[in-house]
Length: 91
Picture 1 (spheres, rainbow, N blue to C red):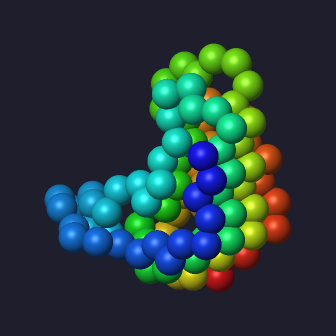
Picture 2 (tube, one colour):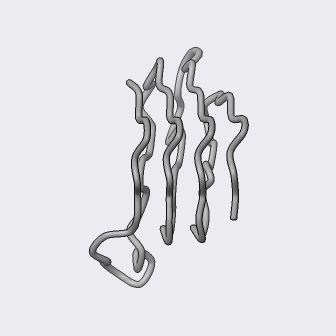
């Protein structure tokens, strides 16, 4: 899976904890062979989270050249996966 060259921002809000949405692009449940590259995340709340419970085995996830423009958290939040993250810009 390749998520590439997207412009991502918050949508319709829900409860107080989700004023700017929850998880623009979360990766979980033993997902493998994923690249997240050259995306622009702007004015988002909880941007990305990788891994939820007990992932097993290697995941082969690359995360590079993304621009976080006034986003609040999870740039990304890595829990139970191994992620190769490099050359991301945090503003």
